[in-house]
Length: 432
Image 1 (tube, rainbow, N blue to C red):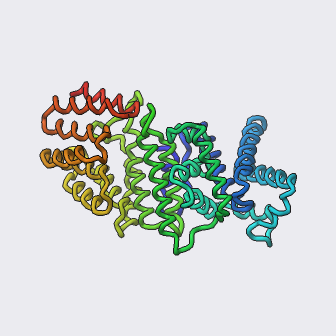
Image 2 (image 1 turned 90 degrees about the vertical axis):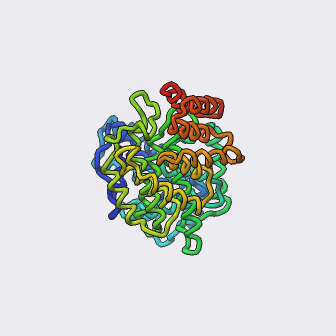
């Protein structure tokens, strides 16, 4: 498992893993992504969100300078400190060239310290999480819509380029660029402070952070468009940020449950694709490939999550039951049906209802499952979704009705389906 999930190996102390990434390329990518987040968070905290564009350009320039210098002269003794120093000097030089320098200095959060001292202080390892957390809450600020929150989080805190974000979220690059620009302008226009939320607004702000991180993870776990079924990097970055949140005083039991959920799913990422990069369904996955260490870590976060019960608690519990089962047949489907019942009490999602129906069929109640799916089929909620067609096909298959299953899968192919999902449906039809 790559480093993004290995960060979650330390639920108690919050320090990052020092395990080596799988390759030199991934080491470089890992290093620059994380230093990008560190620098942008700290420099924005010192010089303000109004200069976020300039700060990002400065950090990028420092990264390029580092790569060129290190290729010629070799790695410095402390690469992170080297980049910190270069980026800090660059931003100060840029500001000194502007007439706004004096005003910028006057706006520094703690006037008794110089900007250089503040940057150095907040870039210290023990201080970095505070700046990163502040930036998470800024990126997920309620003045921004959800897509903008995700795009800005990926840009500022994950170091993704516009084209990477566009590919990850399957949006047009120009659309992503404009969305991020508008988000930055809005934060500056609204004079949003880089502060942690007050206790009175923590719950609402934390809920937005949870939802953003989970949407990021889900988009990586099963992309909604395109040919690549999984974006590991999206999954890893969302888990890394959630881990950071969980190790702060702001992390709640719901945060712990969300991290456990991500780790349970993350433990199965490698088995979700075959050698050709095609999606492998849960029932066909090689369970020997599941990351047992990650499952144990998820168990520990789940224990810390305890109660109260949120949708993330319940979804994590379902993921846990799948991870513990030796096979599809040995899965505790009764417990999973009960957990979906409780989820539906919290939120009447048609997706939860669809998943509950499949669990019903898996435990042998195909007739009840089909009644549930027929109700969904007659409602307007997900009638046009290929997911409903596939669920109905699965229940037919479990009932031994292969012809009916194939017919429904053929109907699914007529829907709006991602390329990798289309290939999966075709393979399923061939297998039946």
